[in-house]
Image 1 (cartoon, rainbow, N blue to C red):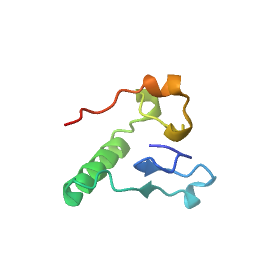
Image 2 (cartoon, one colour):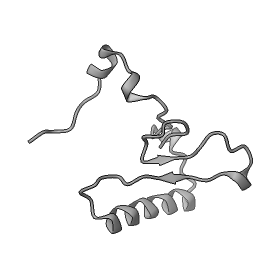
Image 3 (cartoon, rainbow, N blue to C red):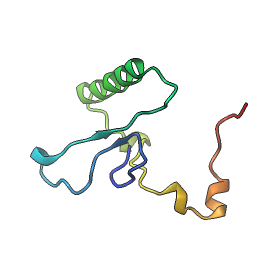
Length: 85
């Protein structure tokens, strides 16, 4: 997830200061994924996090607010790519 990066699958905008104005944006995770399964899995993970009071940042899961398109070549080389066919 991210707070400023608009290309993240889940974004919680940082500009919302009060709990009443907080929201989240959900983007399609993959064009080839079954959207029903994908959104069900995301919803289940979110509910599990709320019920068990899991802090994603404390577990190393973001927020990831860097822009991949502005990384230097050296930084880009450190990112592992997915397998290609």
